[in-house]
Amino acid sequence: MQNLLKRIDSGLRTAGMTDRETDFMDRHYLINMIAYYFLQQLFNPPFNKGGQGGFGKGLIIKSPLIPLSQRGRLRCYDILNFSALKCVTELTNKSTKVWKNKFSHTIRIILNIFLGLGGVIALLVITPGLKRTAYAFQGPLYIRNSHPMFVGTGSPVLESAQIRESFDVDLTYSSTYLVRNSGEWSFNIDLEALITDLRLNKVVGNRLELGLDLPLIDYYGGILDGMLKSYHDTFGFSDYGRGLRPDNEFLFQVNHNGLTVVEGKSGGVSLGDIKISAREVLSANDPVISMNAFLELPTGDADKGYGSGGYEWGMTLLMDKTLGRSLMAYTNLGIVFADKYRGRGGIDLRNYLFGGLGIEWMYTRNLSLYTQFFIQDTPFEKTGIREMDEPGSILSFGAKYLVSRDFALELSFSEDPNTAGAPDFMVSLGSSYKY
Image (cartoon, rainbow, N blue to C red; front, side, top):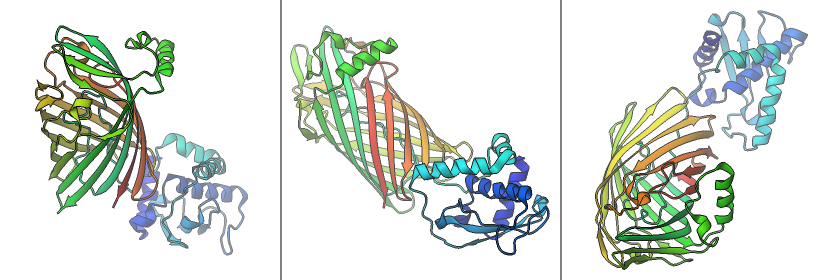
């Protein structure tokens, strides 16, 4: 069956169809046309003027289930002899608009399955379908560590090795609870945060991308404490001690050796530490390999927890590797060279490593599904508090939807498996426009 489908695919391409036209001949449209073939063999009516039913006859299929913007005629001679398949496509409308109504799309697919009868259902079950024209992968989800003590210490994220020109707006909502004391340190953090990243990427030449990330940060008491307690109780997870404090009451104060280092305030949007970057493609083959260098500027108010007050810079080795026609793996490995945490007192930070792995599954040409894992070491010297001393890990699941060729939306949910160095949970919503 797989060989049969490959022959059909080969016939469509050798018939002179362009890449743009073969985009229309994806799995659902092929099923649609084969379904009509099965019906013709069952009832043997002419499907249009001059069309003849029966085996081995010239067959013209004009399917009303194919959208008008993508409707065409497929003429197949000797359809049973797929090695000699000859198909000619005459598109009556070359519009490249895609369905914007997902409900309508779903109904069409259901109708296709019913029309296909047993033969088409077998086709779906036995084989994964035709090899489609390749669509561009959309790149990993943008997941930033929104822990208040890490937002200005380099802010590494999982990124693609490929370069592009785009303007992105990413919103990350997170909840963090950390009330712990040691001999030298006291961390009193109970808050929710909304961080909006405005990112601009510009390609220079063929291999260099320049980037700018402007974060806007809003800390406040939040609204989710009650829901999170119920969630943790239901599944038997630790609530990190939330039950010891009033619900949705803001707390953000960090002390070191009796001196206040950070004292945050609730409400109001403030600028965080701006990050600039430069990414160069080292190899454009598969896998794509790039090197990224970045510098974080002390533009956020460190006294209130909107930045570190120092200059952090780092380097990342990035690699994108295809795993078949619908899977892409993204891997990053990097290092951050940290400065001091210059809040109300200078605290030495240490350099740290980070890395990540993400898998993108191009479920359809518009929808990609993701799972990502990111880990980073702590920039703080030994504090005696596990949540600050152990590496932070972030496990994320999400999706991206390509609204148009140049505009995409993304949604993701992230948890901290290690319960250290990261918020208790994060929800991210993003948009990307390629200009």
